[in-house]
Length: 130
Image (cartoon, rainbow, N blue to C red; front, side, top):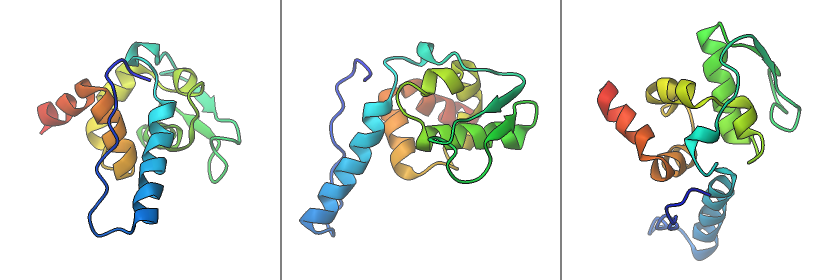
């Protein structure tokens, strides 16, 4: 987990206690998967990447990094389905920073907020791109 202490997101007020608890647990699942630092992300930036079935359990498993749509699809899939040990293997820090302004609109709200809360440089890339 990143060195900055993560606080659970406040639960929306119109949810029952059980639903709010489910949302907190869902968020925590993604927090637990985060690398300590974006520097750990040293995945490929070229070639064809084959994802294992525990990540790409539905849809494509092979991604050509030379094709922008496939590259962003790989990152979206890994951010949602990859486990802690998968992230350094399949994500690259420089490419994640480059893709983030678009990628953040394609991932779920929970994934987006967990990553931006943990790594402010991602959120700052969003504002710089605007």
